[in-house]
Amino acid sequence: MDYCLNTISDEEKEILQEIMNIAFGKAAADLAEVINIFVVLSVPYIEMLMAHDLPVYIKSQVSEYGRVSIVEQNFWGEFKGSAFLVFQASAGRELISLFGDGTGDFGSESIDALEKETLMEVGNILIGACVGKLSELLGDSVTYSPPRVVTENTPNDAIPVNIFESGSAAIVLKTVFCFNERNVHGFLFLVTSHDSILWLKKSLAAFMEQYE
Figure (cartoon, rainbow, N blue to C red):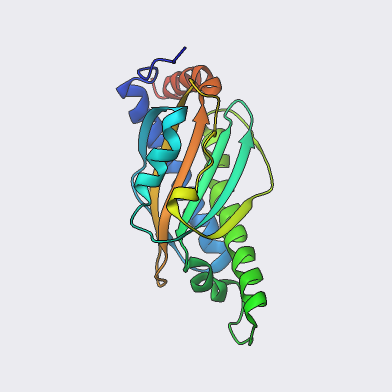
């Protein structure tokens, strides 16, 4: 049985969007401290979908990229789900210099390893800061799985087909990001399952009570 897609009201979406703005601002500041470069995050967009529509939706958002690199990380708490950080395939090489002196002469195998390590580091910081601050503002704490990095993939093969149980609803929190002084941009998708929706509604109401 399908879950109703109108579970989250327009007012709740607006509140969640404001909280995400705060969380993403924190994420940008944390990343700037580590690599001394600022990441710009767009105003977050919130979409309610059925779980079986998620792969097609995310693929449609990144279809302009011929090939992609993805950092995927799961998180657990009252707020639980999956995060997908999607870059253009060339992003890892563009970002390598941010974590080193850029003077090494690396073979192709070393470059591939450095690329994955760099993407994993950026993903750890960006996903951890966004999810962590968002859950903190909503009165929760989360734990994370180790991030998984896949490079040089196509958008059609980028996202698992069965992210959540078929027939369940999901909330997608999407932002576009770019790094100042680097030709790197992409998407961050935070996807939480229907299991978190009731908790989310209560937490949004409690958050607003602070200002009433």
